[in-house]
Each structure stands twice: as structure tokens, then as C-alpha cells.
Length: 317
Image (cartoon, rainbow, N blue to C red; front, side):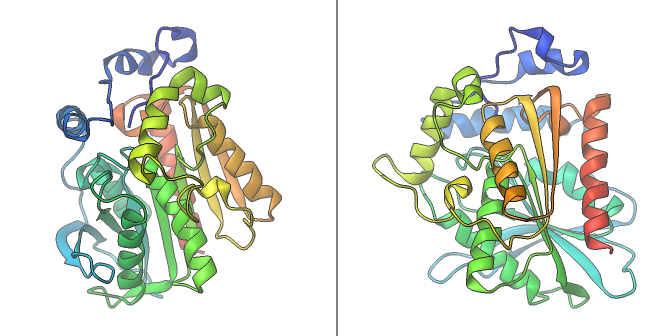
């Protein structure tokens, strides 16, 4: 979900990103149907810049058993042709969209790259969306797919000791919440978490929220948690969790022009202080989602290359 980025201040933006920032559609999640239509049209344009296939990657779609009482979860599985000695590492990929919009298509390009260049099975998750399915529906869907993957569902050569979770925007918030949840429940264990533009914090008076998206972020949390939710439930807003010890190693990426910037950086700081292994990359002159919406920009190529290399290093030790 693009924030209310202050693109009127071009000095903030990398020249290759500036035009794209001005063309990003405004999305109001208070009207989910309209927001979904807007994002679908924007994604169709962005996806034209992405390859549909990659050499050595086989793509299939299937439905995974959902959580108790819920429908199956649709996933796209990106499988590299070569399986390394010791089995195939895997990554659970969670799309963004403010918990209200988004689809498997949003992570297609990154899933291709991770399968091809990070040498891992990438499983992209089509979790249920708010407000029709508020918290904890999406998190429970992601947990169900993780359990399926750790049980080698349909993939007998997956190494359950080398499963990572990666998410973008609200997907990164789900990834962080999932890492906390499996820590507390004793598994399935995660070897790594990759949090890109993470939506992990609901503090309304952070400078980045005030400047780039106070209205839209407040609306997003109301849709996800409910208009009268009170204190957020455990795992819904990961930066509210008091105990951050014992979490998997993390890679965290933030952008300058992004309402979620300060909350993400604060979460990264707290992960470090809790004794976790954390790599934090902040990109000045960039905006929320720049890496895949403007994939040909030099800064986007660098950001994607770093994400791929970090994941590959974490899963191929």
C-alpha cells in the first residue's frame, strides 16, 4: 500500500525514482473494493516490466490445507530446477497491501528471483484480507502454510531446518508476527526472517507517519484490527511485543519516504538490543515499494540484489 508520500519534495528522491513516485495511485483502504481495483490496475502496469518466467524455475499453483474451520489457502510455488546437496531450503513469501489489498501477483517478480538466484523453494501465500477477514485470519493462514511446508507437503526434498519467512510492507508485519508466534509455540522453527518496508508499528505520532501517511495508516489499522479493537492482540502489531529475545536472524529494509519507516527502524533497534542477529539497510532517496515498482532503477537493483544475497547466505550455510 503506497503511503501518502511527500513526492512534492524531490530532493528526497533518487532521480530514477522521482517520476514513478508521482505516478503512484492514491489508495484509500476505507473503501476496500475501490482500493483493490486501483491496486490491480497499477499492478498490471508494473508487472509489464517483470519477466513471467525464469530459466530453471518451475511454477505451480495449489491449495494448502488452511487453519481449522477456514478454507484452503492458495499458494504459488516457485521451484528451482537444481536441488543442492542436503535438501532444498525454502522461503515463505508474504505480499503487502495494507492487510486489505494485494495478491500473489504482487510478489511474482521477487519469488522468481529468490527461486533462481537464492537457490530456494519460494512459496507465495494468498492469505485472507481485511476487513472481511480481520486479524488473526491472515496470520493463521500463513501459519498453516508454514506448517505444511515444514511437513514437506508436496516437496519431499525441502529441508525443514532451513525455512525462512520474507514479507513486504504488511506482509513483513505478518512475517514478524509469525516469527514471534512460532517462537512462543515451539515451532515450526524459522531459520531467518526478511522484513522489507515492515509494517510492524501503530504509533501514530512518529515523524514518518505524520509526514507521509497519518490518515492512511490509521485507516489501515482500523480495517485490520477492527474499529473498536482497543489494545492490539498479541502478534498483530509486532513492535508492541515486549519480549523480542530468541527470534530468528533478520534482514530489515526501510525507505526514506515511507510512513512506516520510523516504526520499522525502531523494531530493528529493539531486535538488536534483544540480542538477535540483525542486518538493517536504510535507503535514502527512496519510497515505499521502490524495489519492485521501479525494478530497472540502479537503487532498486541494488536493493533486490542485497535481499537475494542475504537470503542465500542465511539458507546455504
